[in-house]
Length: 448
Image (cartoon, rainbow, N blue to C red; front, side):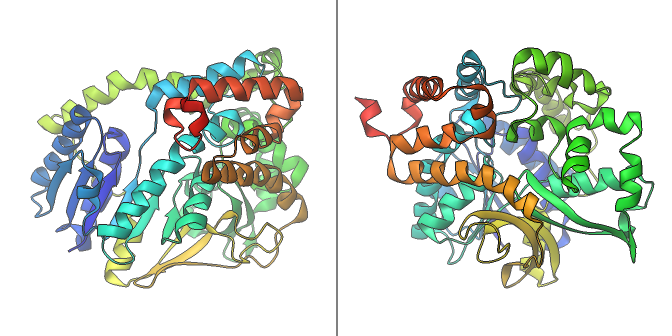
């Protein structure tokens, strides 16, 4: 049976969900699940919750834990990454330093100064992990990356290592479920074509059988409750013709139109989120997701204790995360379709070769097999390229230690360029480089 290793297993919510999914798949219930984290306390919490899941379901899976990454990946067939290099301390700097210069990020983990610096911290760790996998993991062990910034991280791994890797997100499946609900179509009857880059892919087709559902979606987004739940995405559909995969809070960060200053956010953007229960009401504000991460820790710990003690019921169905379905398809050779982040080997011809694209993929015992997109609208490719420019230079900076490339990357970010002058951007980047130098080993001059 396969050995499945989690790097960053101290991410309790994600580890709990993914391992629960895996242990609900009959073909994976005898697996060895190896948990690794640098924090022994959080690692033990993760081990306890996974072992409790195994015990309460009466399964034969083996659960192990270690703080030694090389030991964790030895003979691993699959390696799942869920870590956050620098933790909340680094994340706080990603938000607070740019805010001083007028860059108002609500999440800051994919693009913008926050996304760039999260990638610069993460890529050296991913590359070290790949070297460990090359040395001691099973031949052709698959790396399943859940760590943001997804596109930049996967691009760097593919370019430097050539390892089998797929980046996984839940925005495609989550958004498709939402759209089906808006027009009251049973989700199991929906079929769609979706492509682009992570957090900025678009539904090129959305159908029920032979019926094009886009006319009904265009009517749905006129409803006040729909517009209020997704103000940015509905407006983007009106102006660019297609619906984007990532939520309105996130989507507002990758564009120059929505976050030009704090007053605009507070008076124009946030009030348009009319449904606080959607969760993105506060996330639309600067640092909204950082506050969420800080505030959810006590709740996560209470839930952890309830699951371990048996006071909380275990899930009986898998979530829509792709990870368990990939492992099941590869182990059983029963095909599955997922949306994965993979190198652009002509898959979307009007996006740059080698960049990381998000497309439908067939998965079976042969691994991840991406599909080609026959027609990708020019306006969508143009939007993607504004993000890909930043991604490319960030990869260059991370792989070479070129400090100038960091400045170029942030200067070309659509949001940053909309609110800052070039001298301001240079000063901001320099401040971030020095504040985060302990997590940036590729820039050796900063360590002196």
